Length: 224
Image: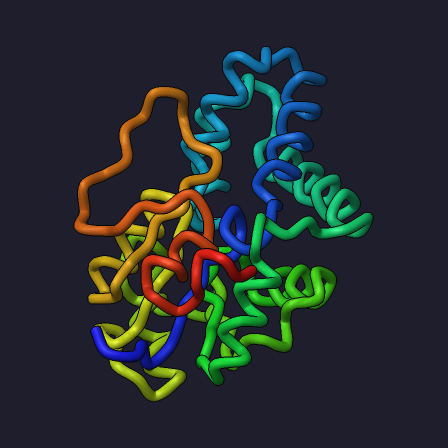
């Protein structure tokens, strides 16, 4: 690939360390209704990378009879919002990588399954919203990950071909979406079920965003 036309970033678990905050709230609430963490935590891992709609449907599989899934989810998301209001932690190297790309006049967009209003709020609260020309959120696309539509539509919004873009993802479903869209895809794993192998989709796997940019030749190993 010549110089990428754009860089497309997932948000939760890739730019922002919000998945762990979601998990903390989830374990607290499920513990209050008698679901042990040894059951709740593996279940939560299966939700990583899914859309809000899918998460809502799946909750009914876990919750005991008599617990309203909608009420539980509302309480969960409210608790998560309270945690996020105290600060949105960035994943390692995020600010330095975004600064480096901005210095190179790179075009950037966020492609997230989170709904638009909270997504933009989280990015603003974390101090990185201004780096991105576009935010394609879960309620703003024709289909959700693992469908390639979010990445295709983000590229279209930037006026570029997804095959000329680099995508960064943490989850398997997001990686599947980016690869299917034709992006050169880096998977940077975050939370995942213990012992679960990464899918072999043709993606590159790196431990963090800095390592991915080194692989692309966009920063030197001695920088950042």
